[in-house]
Image (tube, rainbow, N blue to C red; front, side, top):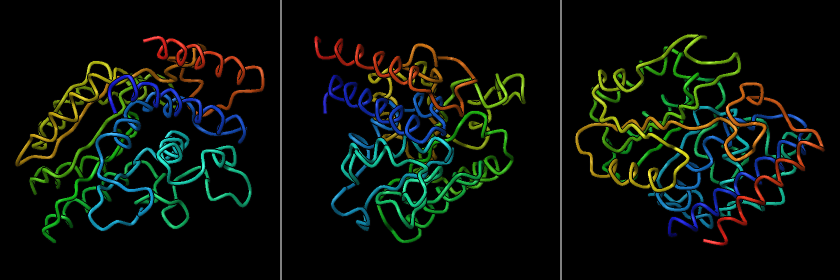
Length: 279
């Protein structure tokens, strides 16, 4: 895909997020929207995957460490062809396979169940180590929230990954600056994030705008060239990106839009789509 097509796809993924959370009347739109461009690049450009063969042995692996942003993950998987896009409106419904956190036993394309913050990166590190031990060439990607990195287990995993020189591992931090309780710097300041990962022997790529597809592309292309170290991409993003009233608002961390808000949000995204079609 070219950059314009990726931007258009990211907008479709954002529409899927809003539709899913609105239908469920619960869920986490803010961090799903901030990471939509990253989800898009991973699933439509970066990773070696096959929706027709989701258990392909040499596929690249992805772990959503910030598992509560499942609406963004599910929307990317659906639009990539792992399951019907129409199923997004079954999010969190009784009996649905699309529950509030990803489950590898029930959802095609999900490599690891996640949701307990801090644990996903450890699973990703284990996958990367396993690939090295088995002589496999697949790469492992994991997406963390910036509030999530307040968990100590994140840094245990980072220390291990750096020590073992897992250069088949890419850790992405969605640095939207907000968590459920407010500004991350005020709740429990994790800054400087880049220096912390560097201290654990990571190659760090600081992404000034993680919602800019050109910059996202450049970051992942740079990550592929790194040898002898795991990579951490620190992506500065906007929580609620693409929806006017959700942007940079901690209150939309885990709140679903009502019917009127849903219409406004979808109208916002329709305008974005129209602008992209004119380019």
